[in-house]
Amino acid sequence: MIRSAINDNDELKTMNIEVFTQGSFANNTNVRTESDVDVCVMLKDTFHCEYPEGGKDEDYGFKSSDYTFYQYRDHVKKALQDKFHREHISDGNKSLKINENTYHVKADVVPAFQLRNYYYNKSKSADNYVEGTWFVSKTGQTIANYPKIHIRNGTLKNNRTNYKYKKLVRIMKHIKNNMVDDKKTDGNIITSFLVESLVWNLPDSIITGYYSWTETVRQAIIYLYNAINDNKHLEWGEVSEMLYLFRGRKWTDQDAKQWLYDAWNYLEYNK
Image (cartoon, rainbow, N blue to C red; front, side):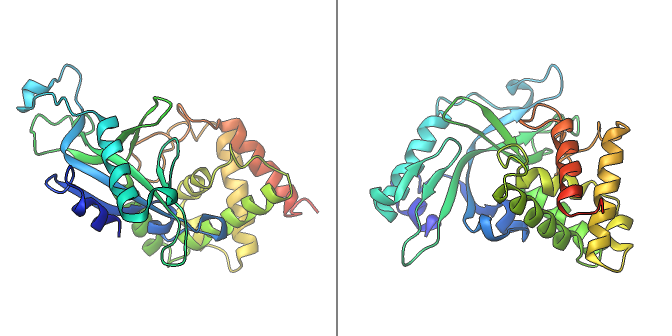
């Protein structure tokens, strides 16, 4: 239905736009409180570039566009309003929200420009880049993500661990959500994304090395807590491995360490 909305819009139907799911639903790590579908509507005609030091548009044969991200977001919003009706569309800071009704589920739609990262590979070729997404929140924050790489990396780790990685992610998310419900942690700081990324940074042997989930969770908490305590976390990345987990985030390493300590007590491993 979202693809249909884009194709029916006069401003958007001639543009090169890719529509795909992302987030926990696409990653198959969603739990009860993450029932909505996260959909990216990525424009590829106009894109944002990250160049190696000293690089500029002209080096790659590009020229600046006068089509702004906010114009694009407004066009996507209008397309959704025409398809789903205005009363079902609301503005979030990062996404356009489609309210649930009797014939479709709730969805968060993220308009984005394609991100072409030439910096990562130190590439000087216009066709050699790492693809991500780039958008601007309503508060003016620019955000880069790599959702396709996130999905690919998660699938590879899941396969390596006999499908236990994503099961452990969901278990840890359930623990976090129960702690939020019981007012034992702050869900605005300890996000599901952070929890998934912490599990991502576990060695595969921790995930596969124990016969019960109780012991697996216990050993996971021990490993993560000690690793942060010993500053082994400083180079940890999020699941895409394109961005650092503890640099420029709304959580800190101390937030994560405190949550792991609280989770240990919450699960009564201390007894």
